[in-house]
Image 1 (cartoon, helix red, strand yellow):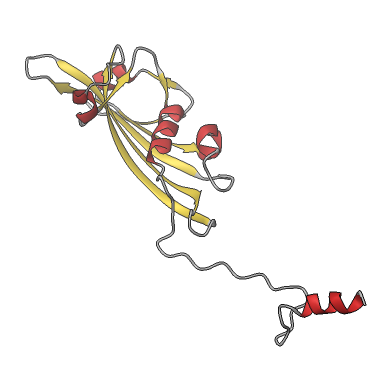
Image 2 (image 1 turned 180 degrees about the vertical axis):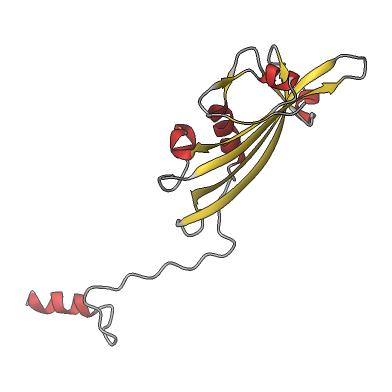
Length: 178
């Protein structure tokens, strides 16, 4: 059975119940409502939104039984600061995260670090906006840059004439002191 629902992103969701129902929820979250992400943006997010889908399911285990899972897909375009030219670069984010729902957060072992999914403690309902914000923060590029930057325009000096020498101002100051 699959449910296709649209939920408000501020409603806490029981991820285990979502997995047991094999349900899918989707929605949009305002970037302005994500303070930790907004702090990393180069300009105010305005009306920008992130589109997300969360699908809960049960994965069969080899020895019998099942493991509750949640798959989160997030899409957004983030205005970041290009580290080359310092202007705004529109960074498209299209992330997919697979979570293994657990009761207790496991220790970080080599096996856990190399797993294709991430352990997510699901002992309490999760606010979807916070989960989406976490995923967007994790997806931020280390060094945002344009593919090719235009060089910044050089400012025009106030009293620039085409044949003026860079030392003309010094010459005028020197002649006024005599």
